[in-house]
Length: 477
Ligand code: FAD
Image 1: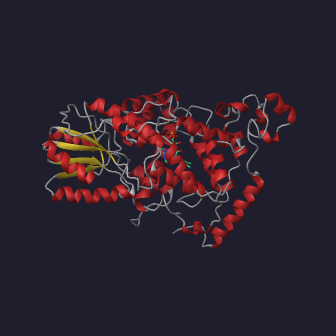
Image 2: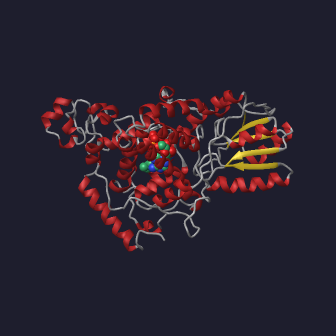
Image 3: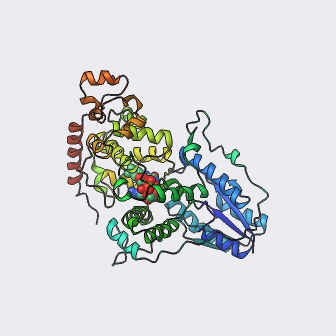
């Protein structure tokens, strides 16, 4: 039977259960639908569009053809089925609230029209409803979640179909029609030197990480000046590689070289945070839009377009924060440790709502992911599940000394500070005037003076927390 494979965020051939099932049945109609609904508050950001363009180009080539259509799946899927004579439609599941509601309705409508419809898990180690507490509810704390998930039977990855008989729909767009790439200005110029979107790029990056980054990951993953993280997040988001593939390969690598076991386990536990974020989003669909702990509604947020712009542009006067924000703008990525510090600075030092940060990250990250982004922002703000305690306020300067001890990361992204002595690199505002002069740094001219004073900002954030405590304690169930 001819089967439509509706690709969404599973842009790969290997370990793709929907594609595997379709290929087993007979001819395959590979289809990608661009849903670019202006009313969607979580619409694709600019960096994600760039990635999607390149990833679809690679997928089309590997499949030997891919029908691209922009619009409403409820209208497009039956039309393509009629056009190609397909009797079945298969896809891999998504977990965002809008997609869940839409897919559920669509499945019933398509089945009623006589089509066979099936969906699969391709992007999580386990489905959100498969991992439960002893009393049968969702987890709200990561550690027991990971324990339960680790005890779960994680399916082995499946191979790519041996043979594909591809059929294309008569109608369709070209990638160029979708204008996903930035033009004026082309802020992504040079990104193809840093990133290789697509399945082959994902596998190559993962293998490089196993050889060069995994050893020491457990401790060095916190160092933005080192190359000990995988940078697989955009590949995972677009489904160019699956978590099951990572799981099986890491277990194999640790088995072959026991010296890698601790680092391998830590890597898998981080991957577990990804499943946990999806678990939370699926069980608590308002996660991207509302404080998970409602008591945080009482927090006295500020509004300041000027401070928000300084943060976005990497001009706060705190080098680690600025380096991170510039890394993000220039590459579409920011190291996790620096994400935590930069996000904390926005919500605690500037007291700007986490939603401003979530929206900026959504637009600028190549790995922008509704579940991971919302859960992480709420984690940093203290309003989320298993969140960082609100009163723990990162000092961006001491975080710099701790995790970028030689200042190599700051020097890379804030070149105007390069000549500063290592003792001044994370606190130029405290450097002696002679040292600043020698390094060519003029505060307020070549590099900003701090936009807030750390001690005062900390005190104001803690005072705000009192309002939250009064509003009903910062805990939920
Ligand atoms: P590695 O350390 O190599 O980890 C491997 C994989 O594990 C990652 O690719 C990712 O899929 C997963 N992972 C690791 N840490 C986390 C985490 N804390 N939460 C969820 N998954 C994790 N991650 C996104 O994928 N998309 C986002 O939009 C996103 N927004 C974030 C916003 C904030 C404020 C913070 C603090 C974190 C955010 N993260 C997000 C989580 C994390 O920073 C990135 O997943 C990680 O930095 C990606 O780099 P990597 O692939 O080199 O990670």
